[in-house]
Image (cartoon, rainbow, N blue to C red; front, side):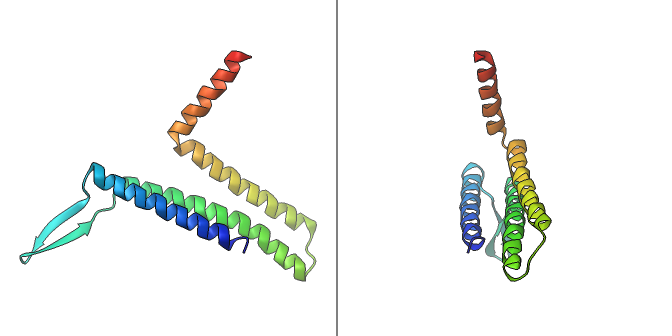
Length: 129
């Protein structure tokens, strides 16, 4: 339950984000390409580069989240049945922390507005000191 509930929450939020991005892309520029084939109209959906980029980020964050936390909970479950070495626990916790660090780094690299805001706050604090 400790993995599946956050997993479902993460998937549902990612789907809502993707739906919002697709609807905003269609508002800015229609993405439906009309093709005429044998006097019938068929519509093909075109996936933009923006949507592909967002999907890549979502898949990366999702995989980091799942791999980090699943390893910790699996070691707890395995330890319930067998006695594991404490070093294994430490390694899985370090792996989970590295996954979290990867998610935060991804957020800082790809979110320009957040970077600007944090730099502004850092400059503001250094000016007051």
